[in-house]
Amino acid sequence: MISLRKVTKVFPNGVTALQDVELEIGKGEFVFLVGPSGAGKTTLLRLLFREEVSTSGSVIVNGHDVGRMRPRQIPYLRRQIGVVFQDFRLLPQRNVAENIAFALRVIEVHPREIKRRVAQVLDLVGLSDRGLALPAQLSGGEQQRVALARAMVSRPVMLLADEPTGNLDPQNAQDMMRIMLEINRLGTTVVMATHAAHLVDRARQRVVAMGDGVIQRDELAAAYHVEVNR
Amino acid sequence: MRLRTWAFCLNEANQNLMRNPVLAIASVTTTAVSLLVLGVFLLLSVNVNAIANSVESQVAVRAFFAQSVPQSQELQELQTVRGWQEVRIATLVTKAQALAQLKKEFGDQARVLDSLGSANPLEDSLSVTARQPQEVKGLAARLSHLGGIVHTTYQSAVVSRLFALIDGVRVVGLVIGILLLIGSLLVITNAIRLGMAARRREIAIMRLVGATESLVHWPFILEGLILGGIGAIVASGLAFWSYVAAYRSAVHSLPFLPLVTPSPLARDIALLLLVLGILLGAIGFRISVRRLARI
Figure 1 (cartoon, rainbow over the protein chains, first blue to last red):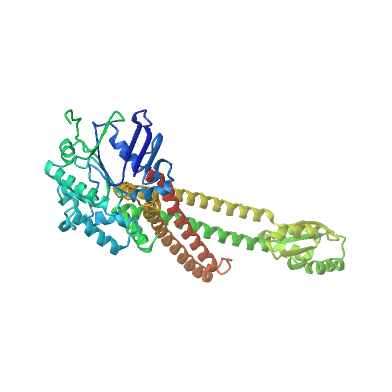
Figure 2: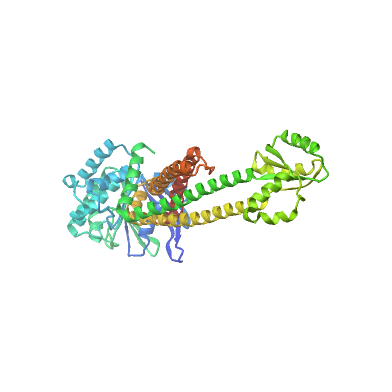
């Protein structure tokens, strides 16, 4: 599903965000990307949906060489990838259902199909009764669930989440985590960058720990920190 | 794109316009004014051109005979000239007729000519008008080669001064029109850019969820076309109807002026303004599109 080979990313200002990164993620996996700020987690995610291009090495996503993709193919790559950010990025003047529908309207899905799918994802994130609410009328946890619903409504094969619980209280963070694990259980590959050690420890999934632009640890069914007595 | 996608783009464009109505009105107004000025100058210059052409065609070439040429030969030459294709009217002006004409032109001062006594220093001449203004020069040359002709003249100075005036009007009109067009282009560009800034969240999300770049662009292209198009419709409508009205009243009050009829001129100018306005909108988008890439 995802394959990074000797990927290096150097920004124009000279900062090296990633250094010879090698990473394989299979279909249906759930992977936590952990590590301190500036470790390269966000840059790695951004390479996957072609928001950034690697300086060297190859990034293969769902069979596409993302770095060599022509600009006009990028939208079609992104339709296969759902993305959630720490700051929900909802459109404030549109209600919940419209925010989610927007993602389908701009890729020209039939209105009847849009209606059906919006109802489905609202059900998935537990917000079936909040379709007509504006983002400002929702709690942070609810807003992030709307963002998650929008990411999932195009039925992507892969969900990328960059600190999705960073702005949420512990209870909402747990709810969010539960829904993401459910999405993974239904077959979507999930890559989640996070600092939330307690969530990682409870979920017991694969953990890729990064620091200074390199992968320092890659363990299955692991915890946030290295466990000495395993 | 599908029809409902066009509807989506149109709706987005409309929202941009409604978000900043003052700027939208300013764009439409400046476009309308600049196009209208351009249109008025075009109509003016076409008409002044037509008047000048008719004046030039009325300019007679005078070919003067030598004193020794007998009248029979002069009449023979007149017949020859009348047979030429480019000649509209040709008449023989005897020196007696010329003197009478001169006296008439002198009016009150005609007494100065009395000092000539019975002598008439003038020459017989042919007065010839061309069918087409541009044939005048060639006609003069041809006449000079005729038997018995000493020299030829035509009032080229008047005509060339008139044409210089027309060129002046045309240049001034074009310069003012182009400056105004640049002004309205800047206002339209500004309106589109503000729309882009206001919609940066939408644009970011559209790209994130896989909207094609053309779908990102179209609302702004439509915005430019709407602003330029409405301005152009106003300008071409005003130019068309005011020309038709001006022509109607001029035909009655100034029947001697050879004005150009509104059809097809006014229609063509109106179409030209419409195309220019739409072009303004499209160029406004082109200028703004680099900013879109940076969002």
